[in-house]
Amino acid sequence: TTHLVWFRNDLRVRDNPALSKACEDSDAVVLALFVETPNQWESHHMSPRQAQFIHDNLKHLQTELAKLNIPLLYECCNDFTETVSRVVDICKQHQVDSLFYNRQYEINEHKRDLQVKQELSPAVICQEFDGNLFVPPLSVHNKQGTMYKVFSPFQRAFIKFYMQREHPIYPKPSKRNHSCSDTPLPKPTYPTKPYEFFKAGETAARQKLEEYCDKFVEDYNKYRDFPSKNYTSQLSAYLTLGVLSVRQCFHHLSQKHPSFLKDRQNGAFAWFSELIWREFYHHLIVAHSYLCKHKPFIEWTDHIQWQNNTDHFEKWKSGQTGYPIVDAAMRQLNETGWMHNRLRMITASFLVKDLLIDWRWGERYFMSELTDGDFAANNGGWQWAASTGTDPVPYFRIFNPTTQGKRFDPEGFFIREWVPELKQVPSKFIHTPHQWAENTGKPLKYPNPIVIHNIARKKTLEAFEKAKK
Ligand code: FAD
Image (cartoon, rainbow, N blue to C red; front, side):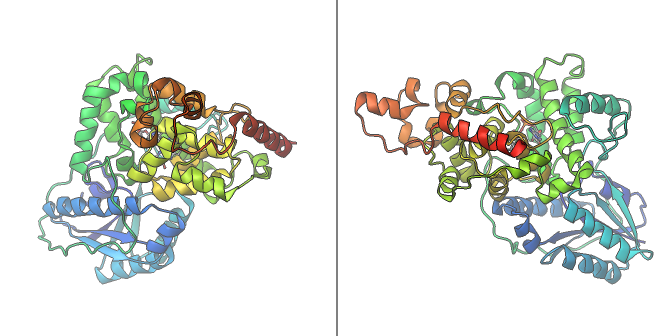
């Protein structure tokens, strides 16, 4: 018997249901497969940093799998159509009896899997699992049997559902009897770029998780909104590519803080809530597959007349808007491939509500730069900020970028790190540096604000109200 495990966004050997199930029959020969799809990735705007992170994690995965006597086959196909026929060929070539994989829920990925299943049937059985979420999408629903549209009731129902069941973590499978030989992985065809903050490999990911639960998570709700404090876990890229599973996160969290569900004011609970936001957005794209086609959740928002000024867009991208907190955040993204959540909210709001640029432009740009780019979380975050999604900020509540900066980077520590032109500006004026330049007559090599917030805000309100009529 030959079993093939197709790895996609689950690059780990622990708590991997597809791998564990494929290894249950100790006599079966187990092979592993990864398929790079450069044209498809490009059409999904995948960042070169993410491609590099995938490659680095695959090297670790190959080493881990080799210890289990499981060889990793690496294929490069242009897109998902080519992938379908390549997977079918590989199954024939290796006389595979069963194909194992953890589900992906985005529309193109889902279609690809359906085609593979159809083409392989009945000779090869496809065994699918839900390895990358807490629970299968749509298993948590309201009394009408449909997906929640608002986060808080979803969270309550989810916790109830999750705690009523056992969720064992799948251990690393044991070593197979058949020996295997691997060929070194080729360099990816897709462009790559170095990323920061994430050390590749499952072991590094687990160590970071353990350290986070040990030392930081308790104060998460106190400090998580202050970018200079660095109090969030920075585990997102591991979760996006499945180097770590959310269940492992829950498992470690409850080991370190066994009663965290009882005291909901603590940091551990607040952090768990963020993992549930991730779950919520992933379930939503299954319940409303048009979200994968870049449609807004609130239909009327599709009639907004965006200004889409390309010069403003370029200035937003490069961190030259004249709003220090926005510019610092965009420069952090451009230089490292990661951005703090509070700053994702501020920069997204600025693009949509101050520049009146279509949220989809920003969504695409984030994907093309983020190491942790994840369709569901990114789309959910953008639609939230743009007031076009489920559970959005109401469209008339518009962040003031200067006030946000004052609240969440009061001394300007974060701003000075990323906008060196403002290093000499005193803290009192760090969010309004032009005022300081004017008062003191000192030269400032920093752009003037590209829009005046109060005027921009009014224009945006008008555009939303016109679309709503
Ligand atoms: P922590 O605060 O430590 O949170 C732990 C984990 O929970 C994260 O790693 C992530 O998996 C999940 N999480 C946290 N906040 C959210 C959230 N609001 N929505 C969904 N999941 C969440 N997250 C991505 O993983 N990929 C994206 O492409 C992405 N794009 C975003 C775009 C916008 C406009 C916004 C507002 C948010 C986006 N997020 C995205 C969510 C969030 O900003 C990041 O998950 C978080 O900043 C990652 O840092 P962390 O690992 O330190 O998070």
